Length: 308
Ligand SMILES: NC(=O)C1=CN([C@@H]2O[C@H](COP(=O)(O)OP(=O)(O)OC[C@H]3O[C@@H](n4cnc5c(N)ncnc54)[C@H](OP(=O)(O)O)[C@@H]3O)[C@@H](O)[C@H]2O)C=CC1
Ligand SMILES: CC1=C(/C=C/C(C)=C/C=C/C(C)=C/C=O)C(C)(C)CCC1
Image (cartoon, rainbow, N blue to C red; front, side, top):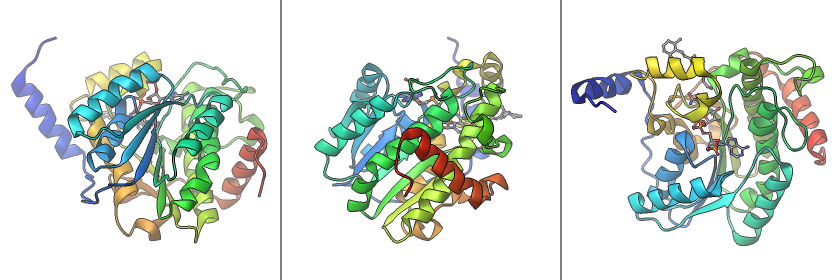
């Protein structure tokens, strides 16, 4: 590995210039409980680190517990916060999600911040343990079920917040109810976009249903961020490498999630979508309440949840 300090510095300045949006909240979190999915790497790891830095007890919900434990040790060392805990959560298996939630509800009295961050992008066609297409299964349905199972705890802990990590890629997404599992036609990039659109629709409908409960929900686009998300596409890996000088670091990518989790007075923007720590415009589909309600019902049906 060759290091060129001058070039590194230039790239770092370039990234700072191009990456606006810093969470400036000074809120501290002693006594608060936070949960971050996919916290063993990338944006999730940096989000969890900052929450721990502010004194919260942070649960790293990871599918690979060993990777999670290494990161937990690292966060404990850097922040001096011992309350960083790893629990097994595989969002591609509803049994794992239910087991995780059961364990969490038994051991914890509160949940103040839920960050639905984990995600997969551009996987070859594959299915979750329950037969859902992988993108919609992990990115949307997995988090949908997790949130449902933790909702009472969030309500009991109010004021509390839910942050769903979506993407600008939602603009290319469509909810094809007749092909939700990609069985009739499938494109790996579009499947990702559809699932990220589902994240925004879920947030809007959740926010509507949670009005007055003290729990608020937000969706975010973290920016284009250097991470392992591009692992399934050599083209994207190549693009990320070529343009590494202007792609955000995971720490910069975590800022909008942190902004939504921490900023005081954000409750009036319940249900909104954020990018670079500002409210951001979403596609016409993402604003469609009828699609949001239908997706909610279909998701409940697929997961065997009551359609209240
Ligand atoms: N990077 C970017 O440019 C952008 C990212 N995003 C979104 O940001 C979020 C975080 O992504 P990012 O940090 O970039 O990507 P990474 O690939 O670095 O991190 C994704 C995390 O999700 C976890 N994960 C994947 N599948 C599962 C599963 N079945 N169960 C539990 N955890 C799982 C991964 O675990 P493991 O390490 O075990 O694979 C990993 O911890 C995603 O939702 C992504 O869509 C949105 C826009 C742009
Ligand atoms: C065009 C272009 C780029 C490509 C951006 C892309 C392709 C972003 C994709 C973002 C995704 C997929 C987000 C995840 O949800 C770079 C590399 C920034 C460099 C500048 C020119």
